[in-house]
Every structure is written in C-alpha cells, then in structure tokens.
Length: 415
Ligand SMILES: *Cc1c(COP(=O)(O)O)cnc(C)c1O
Picture (cartoon, protein in one colour):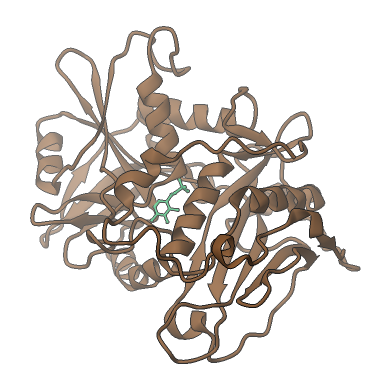
C-alpha cells in the first residue's frame, strides 16, 4: 500500500506535549532494539462461525454493542510486535498482576468509519488518530508502533466488518483502538509487554433522538486537567476521576461538566468534547474561540477540523449555509468564566458548542455556575443550533459521509 501522507500534526502536537517529557528516552524502541514492528503482511484472519444479526439503524445507541471480530496484536520484549490477527470477538484472560490493572497503563482512541452512498467505507483524518495514539503510548512508556501499519490493519478490519457500517444519516461504525500494559509484577516500571486491540461498535447518534442542546455545570472545585498533567493525551486514567463529578452535575439537572482551570477559572472542555464559543462584534463579524492546546486540552481531530474550516471561510471558500462575506475571527485563547458571564449579560455571546468524534457537534443552551444556582442562557435557533454550529456540523458530516469530496475522507478499500 502506498505510504499514507502523514500530515505533521504540529498544530495538534505542539503545545499539548509537556516539555518535561524526554523525546529520546523510550523504554523500548524496536528501531534501536531491532524488535519486529507491526507487519500487516503477516495478518491472519480467522472468521467467526456464528455471525450476529446486524441491528436496524434506528435501534442503535452509542457504544453498546460490538461487531463479530476484533483485531489483536501483542508486544513482548523478546519478539516485538506479534503477527496481527483478525479473530472472533471475545473475552480475554489477563494476569491479576498486569500493569494495566495495577497502574492504569491503558490508552485508547476514538474514530469512525462512514458508509458512502457509493457503498465504500471511509475514515475521517485517521492519520491524526494514529499520531495521537502513538503519543499516548509514549506518554505511558508503552511500546511504540508503526502508525501507517496499524492504519492499514484498521482498514482491513473495517472491510471484514463492512456489513456492520450503518448507512443511515448520523450513523457510523465507531472504532475503538485500545492498548494496555501486560507486564506482570508490582514494580512501578514501564510495561515491557502490551496488548493492542481494535474493536468496533455500530453507533447511532451520541445523544439519542433529535440533536438537542445540552446543559453544562461550570466546575471550579474539581479539575479535569492541569499544566504538566496528562489531559492532553487520550489516557484511560483521565476519565475515571470525572465520573463522580459528572454524576453530581447530573443530579443538579445538568448534562455535562464545563471543566475550568486556573486562578481565573478559564474554560477547558465540555465533558469529553472540545469547547467553542462564538461572539458577536458590532460590525457584524464573529469571533470563533476555543481554548489553546496548553496540555490541559485534548487535541481533538474535530477541534482541529473546526478550526481549519472556520479559518478557511472566505468569499472564495465559504462554508455552505454561512454568508460568503461573513468575517470569522478564529482564535485559540483563554476565556475566564466571569468573562463568559459578561459576554452573556452584554448580549455579545452568540453560541457555545462542544465538538468530538462521538457526537460531532452539540450546542449548549444553559451553563450553571457558582453556588447560588446562577445560569448563563444561550438562545439558539431550531433545536438550539446557532448559525455557526449548524453550518459547521453539516459541513463536517458532509465530508465524513463523502457527500462532499475531501482529502480528509480516506477510503478503506484502497491500497
Ligand atoms: C476524544 C476527546 C475529545 C475529542 O477528540 P476528537 O478527536 O475530536 O474525537 C475531546 N476531549 C476529550 C477529553 C477527549 O477524550
């Protein structure tokens, strides 16, 4: 297969990599230790004898069922990466002393395959997911891997499981690459062995029913991420501590948490999505703002794409659904929660939304803050969408579903 043109993810990489992490020190590097890397030509495929019935698209929720097969790879310090295997989905046994159970050496990715009207499955900017997964592995001193080889295997698995890709609008096959340390022992040292899995889940819309706006509670007592921490990487250990605060927010009547950080309590993320704020200027132009990648923000593929689309908006290259002469001032900067309240009180605040692979884009209509039940209310149009949210969501989905040709949309059936 032709080498995948890996876009240098400087934009995603840059500020999200804490400077204290040494680039050269890696516990085991196949390049230097001459251990075999992932080799797609060694793939073996063992098909399941009992294939499940694919559910009707309208019954699908998010991330509850799995397909018939999974892709499995293991890494050992003696043999490097094993021959890849596509095999029936099923439980695995694991040593109780394994690194992932004792010390949370677990990383994951989230991406989707979309079925085009031409019957071809496609991925959306998968090179960015592969590069991010490699950085996550490095952050936990898990073994490195060739990301082009892994992407090639993901495409093969998608082709095997093609019948599971729902073609109804808003539906897709969610892909969950997962990797965990399997070294046995209580020593707090890098896991010299690991397992890498790719599992698939046919998915309907993340939030069931018509897309509706969600409400947030702006959390300033508990922090999701901090400078020098791991919030800029997709590590499983970032998510467990968010569960109790999110349940508490839900008991107060809010869907998700708006994570804040710093003395000034500036905006971070919206649950597990990147946050965007749109402000009105007197001259009719708009500010489109998202927090900068300072290590506390997960460098989302969707965030990256929303920035690319809005930055490129111009009379010659207008986002469909937006006036061609509308000027967008796109910025990566901090917004303290007090400033958001002020924007709301002065009528400057136009839109707030969250973006991510699972939900694509979700508008926010209500943000609770402080102790006394104070709230910011944001008015949207139909279903709570402002003009930017609506146009950007539609454009992203048109590209993902290959209704609009784009180099971001990568076919799975091409070598
Ligand atoms: C995965 C994730 C996102 C969204 O990233 P995408 O690549 O757009 O799916 C945002 N925030 C957090 C905390 C995440 O885990």
